[in-house]
Amino acid sequence: MTAVNQQERLPRKERELKYYLAGFIDGEGSFNVSFKPHPSMKLGWVADPAFQVYQHRDNVEILELISKVLHCGYIRPKSPSSDVLVLIVDNRRTLMEKIVPFFSKYQLLSKKSSDFEKFKQILLLMEQKVHLRYDGFVKIVDIAMSMNAQGKQRKYSKELILSQLAKSSETIRQVPSATDGNDIVRTS
Image (cartoon, rainbow, N blue to C red; front, side, top):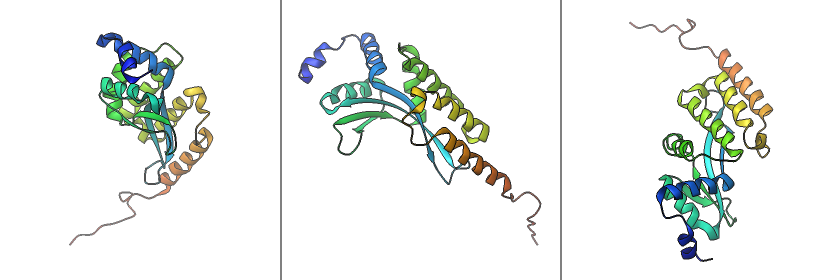
């Protein structure tokens, strides 16, 4: 089917189009939170939320349409030699301002709706800066690991993240601060 024919099949009314896209994304999209070591961060790790939709290169028009309707995202190959493209929204502010309101209004029907609710909860916790504290980061890890079939394709296991997080937290507690009384600054 040509791109022109495919465009003709799409719903004509904006509201119908948005419901169509929500259904399409229910099957082809994902809400995820990855974790990456980041030595310069206080806890040694960073939480990285993202919304993604995958499609074969031949269907790039649908990714472009989703990006246009949502007013956000960028499209790139899944990997350098892949014929699969991915639409990505990974800016936290954009996720809160565009993605969360869209899927709150045009709700998903599959198990993915549960993943979206957890994703939204993580974004709200991050808005409150909870991820900058040890206990808050642990809570986010727990929530994220319960998403997307318990994160079976994750690069880092929950156990590894929490063990390294604990080490980072312990190191932070042992480093004397400039205001603990041990460093005296004299001025004349």
